[in-house]
Length: 356
Image 1: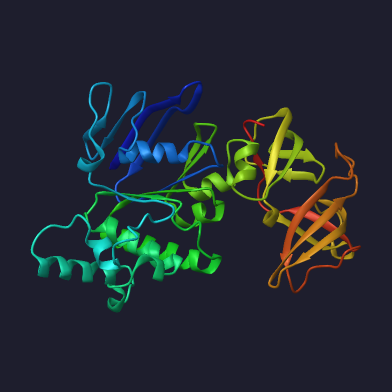
Image 2: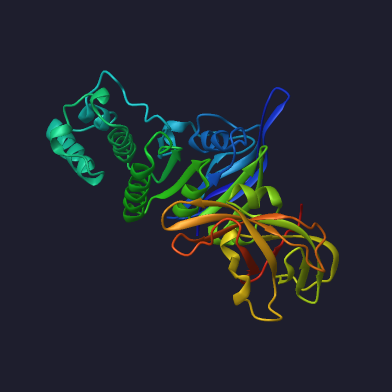
């Protein structure tokens, strides 16, 4: 069952069209991540869902209730939607407890008990209740902001790049904590980010935006392996993109012959491989007749347990662009040194891009 339905939402600011007919369904209890470069319209879409802005055209509904259409607009405070902005937006003149309890009603003792429960749920020590926001670390501030949003018992949680200001290690920890907390509470969640690895690790459903359009949505692994076009492929991670000729399930390209996931013959196509699909061995270890081609390691970027190699392909009989350089990921322990002559082949299938 879908909790949130977005149907052809559009929004313009003067001559600039920020959103162009966005359609998206968000399953109940799921985690959807909207990802895209700066200016792609992702935060504008999130603000439309929250009720902070309204679309020019389109319809938005949640759990069967229409929030926005041509004649009807439900204001933000009536939507029961939680919102955590990028900077947390804590009230600087209020303590942690007062920030979390802002908007809670009822007797003082009941409010204090609820605040204590919320602090515990986001892993904040009880002795932090009387601290001021400026006395907290970035991660602690974000947990206070999350607890404040949870206090209203939202049906939907919107997270607008809440981890972007945190250190790398803390960002991963906070992402796991928030994901687990919202999943346990059964709250449908939408996260906006420009961080590809964050999007891929957090999402049940991934939606990629570019220039105000939703270009592709679906399972994160599917989008990573089968992107719609070259822009999406490169945005979601490092990719090897090259021209090819498709014939009987094989791509004839600079790597020689590579299996593809498209069996239609095509005189001209563009294929994509992820760097982890490329496998290299010492050229003396390659078996006769093995698919692939010879290459020379030109650069070696060692980072401990892994190593990123740049290899320059030697022209193959079927290659169209001799001398192409590719990136290959290798184990840090066994990566060959610069200058090595290796044999490069592709594992699995290359993906045929539908649009260049």
